[in-house]
View 1 (cartoon, helix red, strand yellow):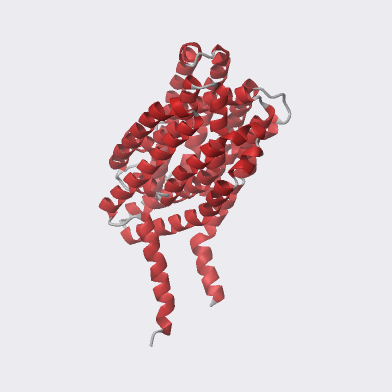
View 2 (view 1 turned 180 degrees about the vertical axis):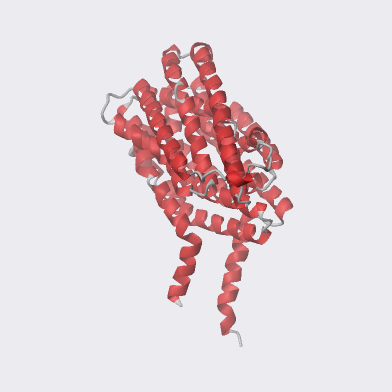
Length: 447
């Protein structure tokens, strides 16, 4: 009985546990990176680094336009049909589109570095930082395309390795061997992303299925990666702006130190998103496959299991960060303890995102990308209005309030749409699954 139950749990969650273990590797490297930056840089340079890093990360998204996410969906669907050639064509097309768009974005960043730093931020010392950041765009985006392709091939553990901890690991190895300044930190990140791009590309070449010559006679139109990517990118756009816009706005309306305080508080909160985002990335290709097979009941079960897994992983970190906010921030240095209230405000938004885990991916991977786009426009408006009204008078706390409000709006909206489109919401599906198991377990005892 016990062996049978353990076997069932292994079949259901074994792969998920391996992927989660891979995500846990992210902790020492990604937070080692942020710890090195916080401990080795003055607070004003911490702020300058995160203003540039956030801005470049957002701009890099414009060179990707969700094509890596669209590639995951297209490759998963093609492989579900047994069409390896379409999967290969989609992959090549994605790399070409993203490489060209990233080259344009990188050139634009270099061209506007001076007016952006001097006329918008009023910080001319940041001009060389933006120039270094422009070099980051191409390797970052091509790394993400490789990771998206690996996810479409259902090589989720390898995908998460490339997506998450590989370049921070290279950064940490590089940073401990070199002097540290905001410019050095950005240069080390660019180097780390370049190494990750090369390793991710090599892994992908070894993983992609061989070409099927027998199916060449059947003409298949190229996948609509750009159109699909734009719809899916609306979700990523909100996520990028949530990460980048607060520090950029604080760089305009407050001292650079305020941006540094907010950035470290946000990075602490991201330990929760590491689990939530990992689960979402893990199940996205499964959603696409089940939808392509028209397995609605399987889709509901997958949604419920994914949410239950995300809650099991996230609730303890949420409680610990809420209770021990000051002590956790003190690990980055005594100057950061004053961001305790900022950190606790941000926790509210992360709790909302945790409860609605995988719902945006459910809509995006099952043909409802247009609905997702409308939701994300609403969330984007909430973020912009919130930052405009709250950041100038309240500084880092105001930026945190705007971000949490945006995440709550997004969570409520995707839940409402999922109920309308599928007849269930992930939290309700999880509850039904748990009740069903309880009823099944109690059935033998019923006379």
